[in-house]
Length: 285
Ligand code: SF4
Ligand code: SF4
Ligand code: SF4
Image (tube, rainbow, N blue to C red; front, side, top):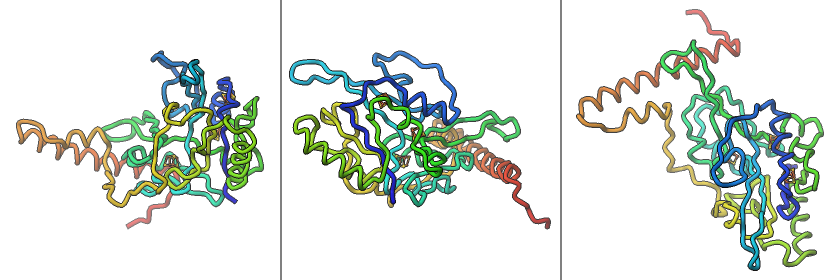
């Protein structure tokens, strides 16, 4: 069985109980935010906000209507993040959930570049033992409460929703339920189950009273993301910038080489540190 979640946006009242429950269950702290002209708080997903309520003002039949939507990792059936990660940080579990071992991340950001929903975020954690950069990357995102689901519980966000806007279950059965609602209440929903087919299908799916484009949802093809032409990067992005051509040329080359050396040294140091952390035995020569 592949698990899934159905989000019925006609039932969401924007209370953010789901957002708070996610932080609470996953021990993610609150964070400073900024006002940028919407009720979204914080403005985007962050390393410590894995679930976020977005607010959209949409004109419906001449009146302005506030429509709220919850965003988080979509747990793609064909996850692009897994396909491009050189360190196997991500895994697809038997029940379809995409979990991750965030502290295996080397900070290359390949997953962030290919994720069609802009989900993964890096938490840069201070580490004075690490040469050159003194911070180490930990990749973060919603894990569909794999710990709870594996023990027969609903995800924390879904458990906390007071209006049943969120439903957890078998993905195939949720699709049947979504179609049942659309047939029973004609005109209540647009004729589109977002996530049924996008990028090959996702575990999280949505019903909406207005076109998804009006809510800022990405218009995506039905085919999985093609990563065959993607060239993964193995260096920290800050160091990649050093490699871009600058004038005079010799300064660019020199800084590029230094950047490469620093990047390689950082990754070697990070790997050594991780080996120590996980008590991997290194055979003596
Ligand atoms: S939404 Fe992004 S991070 Fe989540 S499974 Fe899909 S590609 Fe991976
Ligand atoms: S499934 Fe769990 S980790 Fe994902 S958004 Fe909900 S509470 Fe957060
Ligand atoms: S808990 Fe339910 S009603 Fe409240 S914001 Fe989240 S999805 Fe909407």
